[in-house]
Length: 512
Image (cartoon, rainbow, N blue to C red; front, top):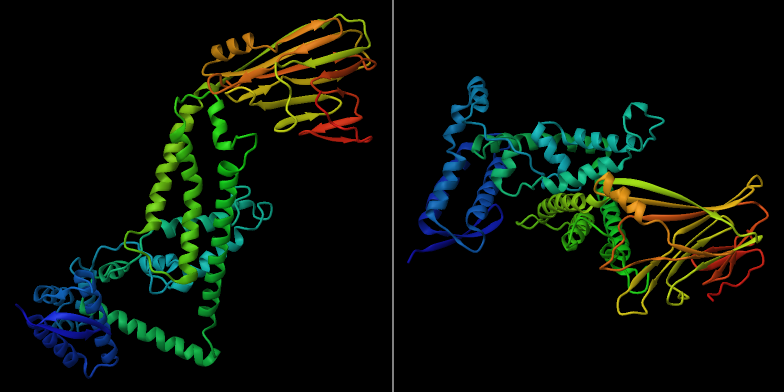
């Protein structure tokens, strides 16, 4: 059983084995003796104690007992005070700093100690060894000028490249660049090892900056720049939260919450389209993840800035970024495979003469069930009509889609004829052509009545990319009347849009 001693190091309480405490006590006495007569000596010793505390936390945590081995390891890492004496010669010091012995591998981290928003600018400044203010000013300037329209900045190269590019670039770097948590990582930002010489140099550099800031504060009365950036960071955080919440709600309603038809949401519409995939589950999941993950990352970052939460060790931002990359790659892969039936297209056109002598041509849209009074799409005026609806009278829901009807009137036409058009897609041009040829609009003609049949799409008989149109070429004095399932005259008096009438006489819309 070993004796332990409770001790405060760097304003933090630790429990240290008695042997380790004696070693640590002797080491701290050496440091005090070495820096006693030096300018900023007390601050340097305090800084070294803070580094010792950080290293203890990194290696043992707060609840564990600091062993003698850990104490020796930390002292070895920091080095003895005698090392400073060996560097009194400036030439030798520079040679040592530039050698592999005095240098650590430089890595890019976000700097949590000097951050205003996410620590990206301060991390870049430490990595490239430039002033933080310069990096922040560069970001603000780029953000400002990137909002200038392309017409005013012809050298921008990309039309419409707004400030969102800089904004998104900052978010991506915030998520992708890890935060420097440990002492080793904080020194690795500058390519330095956490030994005594570098600690002393950083503290002296900080003392110089503090003195400079105090002198500036004496002249300017307040550190305006820091307050400005702090306010900007909070505003930035609020914008992040609002944009992310708005985007999450919008996508949730669009893809998961709004029924565009009776019992149908947009995410389920894909089940009625013929794709190059048998199972679309992973396409849906990866696409939704690709849309939602950036919004969740923005929400997390905004809340973290507003409430100044510390990042957990498992780095949720980096995890979300990796998942977003995976989701994007997965979604693109499935989308390419799903689009195979639509890589080529073809058209087929057929002319049919209308032999009726009547000055009125009647159209009928024939279906075995009545047209519903709601959950249908209608768009019609004097020149065209488009209509489809969802039929749920049977066990399986069905999409009922009629060919688009278009009317061309001209006084020079001395005869009437009907043009059938089909535009189809396929994996190859030949497949698309065969689809177009065998899928011309279906109709029956009896004297002055043209009966048009719809296409029915279900989960077992899916839409295959075929679009149909019937165009009537008639003289101006010939009237066209739709008699079933609704009464509608292509005369300009009534226009129908999604089941609502917009007419000069406000004629009611009624299914027959």
